[in-house]
Length: 528
Image (tube, rainbow, N blue to C red; front, side, top):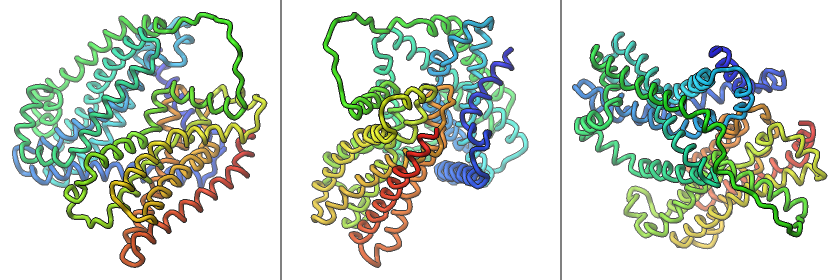
């Protein structure tokens, strides 16, 4: 029965991700393009992780501290797995859409729980492999990798996701326990997300300093990890210094927490799956009915759904958070930019800030998943007495309302702090705003071309759909084009001309995307 439950969940996930390919709705050229795109993304991630790990590997190769390579890699993999799966774990364990169906069938609760834990372990394994493949390559290039090291590396890579899963399940359990007592389940999600993001930005902001400290004081760092979090230390030394004791202790420290997490969940899962104590009791009161125009009603519908899906907000507003942080940073430290980056000429600062704001606008995209999120309710939306363009316009307006205010705030702040001339100021404001509009229009086009209505939960659409990857990474590719063009033409035509050309490119692409949406896009939307 466990095998059947797991196979069902895997098949549902696979079908929701590749249903269009299975149904023959995608040409061979598009399949090849998607495959090449996936290879590119994987290679880019491997290269960036490998670069981070190579810095410490070059310093410790040939010494007794080679295990620091895998200590850093294990820390990165564990952090990535926990942050990437804690909200997914909460959704799969307690709020899955098939809870009522499974509970109505003669299926033992331990089987249901085990199938979901195995699914989550597989997802954590993907996160771990992203880091460990890069770490293995770096270690093989800088140190001596024996057959025993390879075997213990494989074992450790299989065990570390168990520890990440145990931590994720514990956090998800605490979150569900608290949120079941609250009127708004999304409130605790936003609070936890704010804490995670604050920690993330703190680490990113001090990444260079932390890496230097790790290289300079690696043994002291390793001793602190060994004392306060033994599993990570055992993970590293089991690979580079494999002994029976190290491997046995690693197995104990990774398997035992998962067993305890399983016991905790098995005793409380049914109660949390069926408890809705935090639901607000509605008392009927006679009031006058407020009416809105179709456009305002559709926009209000999009707005409410957006803020009732924390994972939607988290993934779509990463750029907004960066914009707010940049605006605050410019206000507080703007006068010290020249001292913070003394190697850069002052006249390049406007272009650098504009490039950063352009990237932030591009990654703020709600439209790339907005159609797919309709799911099985899409037919209800199509039956409303409104035109397809009114539906699409509401989705575009939501993206612009979410993205433009903080983008405009950061752009205007940068203009005043950097004290630029009028032409540069106009481009510093216009380029990011155009990029935001392009992201909204292009994201909607991508979702029309690659919709996904068959999904297990919203996370599949928001984090794993082809339209989201196409819009965000395609937009990032456009930003990279701007950086490359600026670097090649700066000395030839100057900074202002480069910014003007890039603004022209953005305008052309935005208009082309809008024309496609108004012509073919609406027709494809009607045919969905």
